Length: 421
Image 1 (cartoon, rainbow, N blue to C red):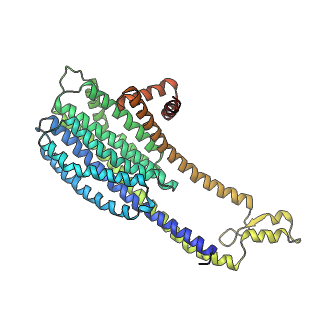
Image 2: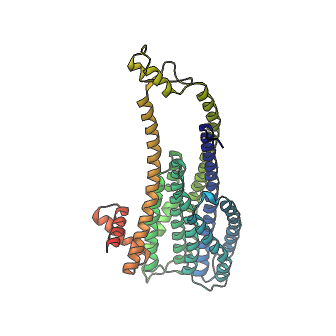
Image 3: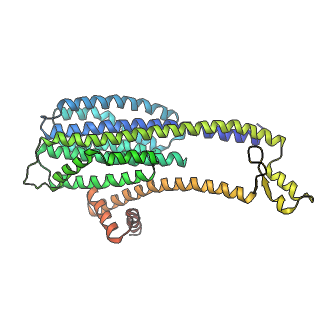
């Protein structure tokens, strides 16, 4: 096959279109993943109340929520198939996570039977659901981490942090519901709730850094909702409760309802983000397909007329044209009449545009990389000092405040010390 510039340019544009279509499919995929996470979060909370109350509360609600989860689970299993067929665009890590999630989904029926028969504790039930949900959240993270278009990557980073913050809020609902239903909130559960409150706010802060004004306004409405004030009051009840003071078990329903109202509002924003992702992908595909047609026209024009750089060379060596004019670029059809720009200006404008896109992508990558660094540092502290995950994070956070340094910088220092020790 004879090599030609036309074939290469058209092939490059076609490949770009295929990649963008794949990103559109991945946006739909993470939407389904997020939907299942939402349903499992509700089922987890109801199951915790059911077990903590010895089966007196939420028996029917739990079964209804389980049926909803099963429906979305079937949708996700179907969504896995196209990802396997398009594995060329994926990576080993993504496929590994998909396999791990499938193992967890296969174990769900047995988990539900054990909950119905009350053969495990509320804490164990919450932990089992949380483990599966963590795998689903990791799928979203992997998609965000592998996206190269800065506009889509930014939205996926926002989506990931919103989902992760919402998951922590869902765990808070489950732990708090367990405490109210059992009538006791001991030190362990109080520490978990405090950690969950702090951690979810950090993710919501990152989410806010990557969203557009319209979504920010919607997010502010969630923050100002009446359920937030009620949630804060009940949080204080849990966190200030003494071991010797019994909680009102009847408040478990109110706690679950209040947390659910907040989570539903966050879910609405999550759905809006998915719609925005799909709209952006569709827009980029249309833009690229239009460019494909333009590329054919440009290549035809290139054969019929010399490019601007060739014209400049001709002008430069034309003794009838002053040198200062020969180093100027005159816009072709479509530009303003007589518009003149130096080649340096053109290149600078292109460089600034590329630099802006690169900055957006770097910011998105940094948010993801910092999360990886913090998680690795926590793992080192947990292994070296035999700490729980909460205790390891608390140690990092305290060091960050004492040294007046960013949490990610402290985590990086821990990794460096571990490497040389």
